[in-house]
Image (cartoon, rainbow, N blue to C red; front, side, top):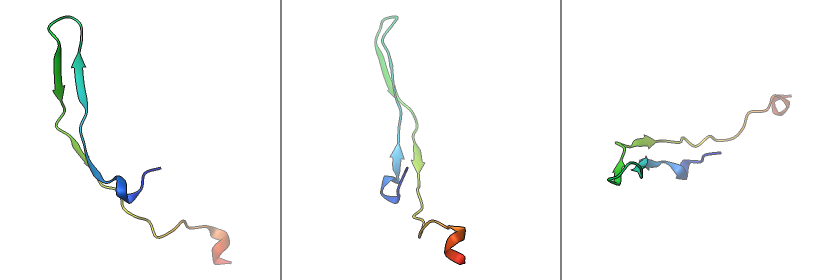
Length: 47
């Protein structure tokens, strides 16, 4: 499970080892924003 403090930009690293020459590059990245939920809803809690 992800939490609010996991919000961050994430980038993938791509390495091509074969065939030569060795290549290393990075993706454009994605901002992953996780909202904090106040709590889980359970039907039993409303009874």
